[in-house]
Length: 277
Ligand code: KIV
Image 1 (cartoon, rainbow, N blue to C red):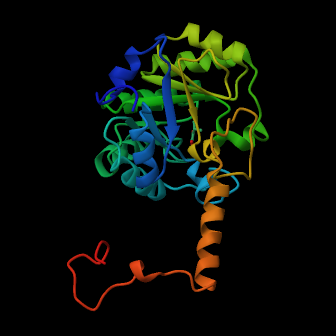
Image 2 (tube, protein in one colour):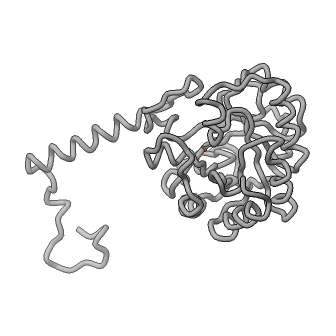
Image 3 (spheres, rainbow, N blue to C red):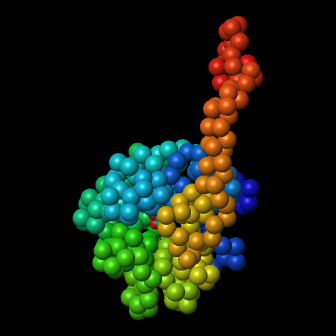
């Protein structure tokens, strides 16, 4: 495991602005994968609303609810010992005004074990972001290609309006965010934003100049092949491995090769049915 055992907090992450050692972030949505990601030394586990697409099989993230995000945050956070757990606020959980947003943000800390929340948007949500920070809930911003704005953007389109992007990132910083995700932004503009703000920038489809990177875990592991964005690097093909393993099991069952004698219980009772022979 890289990075030692020090618990990553939002101030620790904030301090890493400009470090030569980049900040490593990844999504996870359940206990086993959150445990793997944490044990591998990732700095931030984001329980992203991307679970709508990669776990629930939806077309986009707009249908994801607070209850679903609370459930996934709870089961992922339970596994994490070192990384900062950030819960993604779903569509309409913060856009309806600061009061509702503060209440919903608080639920992620109070009921689900997150240490921070993330919300999408720039100048348009700065006042809401500030209200959440004011009651001591750390907030990660997210500007550029913001998937909850898919209908305004007309699809998942790279965002190239330099002035607007810089202004949005600055607004998020001024509102008190401890870091900001830059998604779907040309590398050169992401570099400019990284130089323009004093908080770490975390890129996804935003080139190499950011202070850190994030990917969707299922994309990286080859578990979601429905969409294949240009910015994804697939480090494994777990989908193929899982299909092969399940196929081998099915073949064994049909051929009477599983279970074998070592998988069966003897008549003499033993304490633990999972380990007893
Ligand atoms: O929902 C998510 O997983 C995200 C990341 C891709 C940044 O917002």
